[in-house]
Image (cartoon, rainbow, N blue to C red; front, side, top):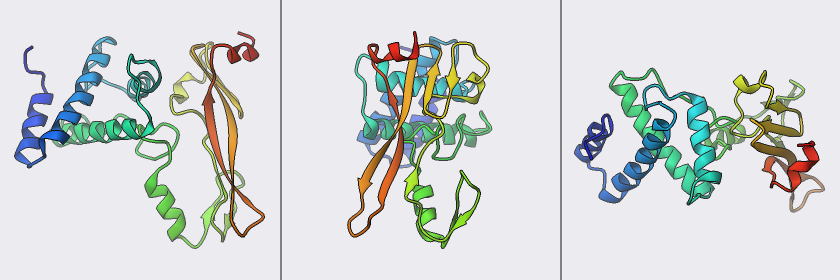
Length: 208
């Protein structure tokens, strides 16, 4: 197999930076999977869009022959972040092709560590629902849509997004629900809004 740029230059840069062999092998595995995935869509690292990367995430987690869990995907996501940071340094791309926040369209777990630390450090926060500022820490976190959703899908006939339901290309179906966790010493519960991918049997509830 002929060397593939910019991967060979990236690996060389990591080697010169003293990265260990295990880390480089893991990065190479993830980057090559993305390379082949993009090739099937007539794309490459430079031309890949946010939608391409989100589709890769969906494939890696739910459709590949060997899918991965959240922790493994977060490691893959970190490797791809390093790759695109390198491409930015080389001037080949203007930035990472996905939004940099830890919200719905991030490549990682969907819960930003930076965002959680920020809420804990501030004396108050602004609620995204009512717009008011509250002095206490929020007891309810949620997402507006599954990670695979893209605003570009909004006008598509085979996609829909409601407050509690989502369909992407009539292939992926989701419902939103709340995970409630009791808080010791309090009458309140901590609620975490999650999007749940439905099996083929349950999809009939959408009328499909």
